[in-house]
Structure formats: C-alpha cells, structure tokens
Length: 180
Image (tube, rainbow, N blue to C red; front, top):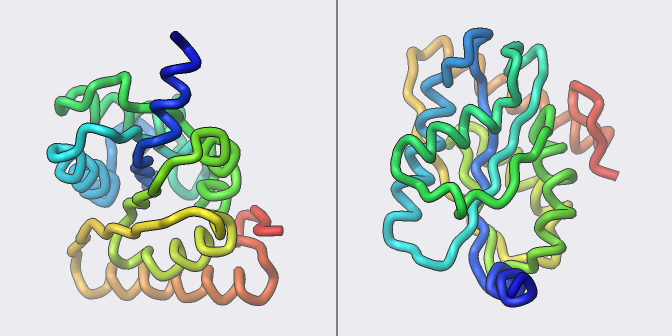
C-alpha cells in the first residue's frame, strides 16, 4: 500500500508556499496570510496536489518558539485544507534555503509541476533562485498581492534589489545561504 501512495505522490502537482514574517507571539504577518490565502484559492479547484510549506527560524522573520511552517500548517488546516495534503515543512532560514532544502523532497516526489507561491514584490528573486536550483522541473510562479504604504513598498523593493544583486555576484544570501 505504501508504494502506491508514493507513486500517486510522484504524479501530482506540488504547491510550495514560501515563508514570511511572524511576530514573537506567533501571529502571521499580512504578507504571510496573503500567501497562504493564495494557496487556499488555488487548491479549491484541484484534486491531485500536495503542499510544501517553508520557513523555520531567523532573527529577520521568526523569533517565536516554533517553526514558521508550523504556524502556516495550522493556518491552512484551520481554513479547510486537509492535513494529509501537506507533505513537508521545510526548516529554511531564507529563500535560498527554501529552494535548496526542499529540493531533496521535490527530487524524491518527482511531481509533474511545482507551483511556487510568494508575494509579488519577491517574485523576481524567487524566479532566479528556483530557476538555478530546480532546472529539471516544470515551475509555475504565482504571486499573492501585498499592498502597503509607499515607504514600506519602497523598503521591500530595496531589500529585494539588494538580495538579488548579492546572489548574482556571490551566489550567497545576506544570511549566508549558498546556491552552490
């Protein structure tokens, strides 16, 4: 029976929701919720999918006492997603690790397609990173929309620009994760 389940998993779509920020009390940010809501919207009309959630700990996004992906898991389950559909929680510290650590799971599952959900402002960097790591897989990128005041959006754009430039120049993120 277990072999049949593995074969079934290998024929489906993976939907990967990238982690975001959470406060020290474990409350998901608006950015995090918008990504999870996009996942819920996408899976409503699908029957053959599995979800991977990324996010562990880090001073820049999660200082709570539990992995970010556990909070994301609870959010999805509390909003109608069958817990059996969530295949993996990835303890990553940044977007580079979202790709590099989850790659082992993806390679094992051999999905027909991987849909990666992140925020619109983060999409360019995600495409760059996952394009380098997931070369042999069919990727679809889906954006959740995040709207905030102009100053916040400018800060987010600067962070993304700086991180992408650093990756292209050094193959490393600002927290030290490596694409090599």
